[in-house]
Image 1 (cartoon, rainbow, N blue to C red):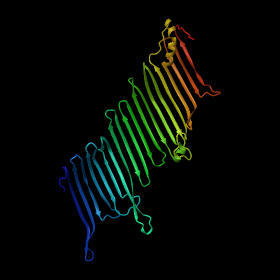
Image 2: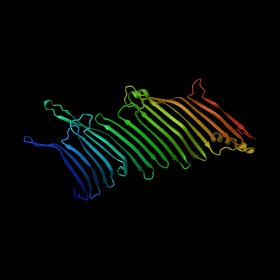
Image 3: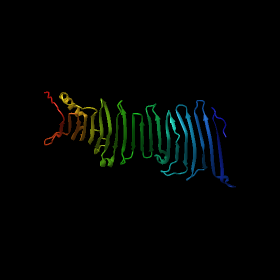
Image 4: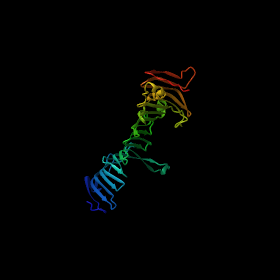
Length: 411
């Protein structure tokens, strides 16, 4: 049992040893076959600067430790450095494998986790998990008869955790991160899930990558919803990007990019609003033979885009009848075009050696208006690019009048 530590700390330690096998002979004398040691500890220290470290646990091992036997230790650790670090209930287990080991058997393994979290400079990682391994191997160094065994050490493991933070009233931030590694072959993989939410912004981001060439590739995806302006405008969209490699790139393309605005309303004032829906952009690129990391200009891109936009003016129209109509018909015609107009578009395009080319584009519009004296309706489509034998503009517009309408032509 230990007494007080400098700065006010203290602790207790209990050690028990047993001799399950020993012998005594006239030739060898007293011989110990095996010693089994078990230890329990409860330790805490506090420095004058307020740093705290405590560990409580147990360990057991045998001596000598031979093939197939292990040294085991388990502990719960708490630590605090004022303003910098706070570790709460971090449970750790350590295993040391004795004797000669195969290349795939770790010499050391460590596993630790805490659900209460690790707090570093105001940011808390909770839960926090780590599972790590240490591999050792020996090989003869060059030098002929004077060659010596050289020990090589490699590390592998996975670290994961979740972070939650408040950005000073601006919003709530959360992220889940995991990272796995193995220095024996240089492999790694990583994943990130991120979210942010406030009164005006809601965003998510997911990313994954690895050193191996897999069908999933290196990918990222996210969503974004934004509210803005005093009139309640908003935009909601999403996007995803995939980069493939090797045979997967040859089969499915090197890059695949998808982006979309699912819906949006932009209030422009005066009762006018712009509505966007189902706006989609898709872009693909094949790999370049013999080029591992081609530049943008070296890639040949193909893509498509489509979407719908609606323009509304609340309260527009109402031309009136009789003599007043003669003075208002041209203004009413302008209002008619803007009172309810819907545009849809679709296009296919390509980019070769950095030069864009539109192979086909269709922009279709429909308008609807009903006033006291005039009603307009119609559909128009514009086809691009213009080419011989191709109709560029198609559609029709209908005009209906009621009552007395005067028409003034200004030329």
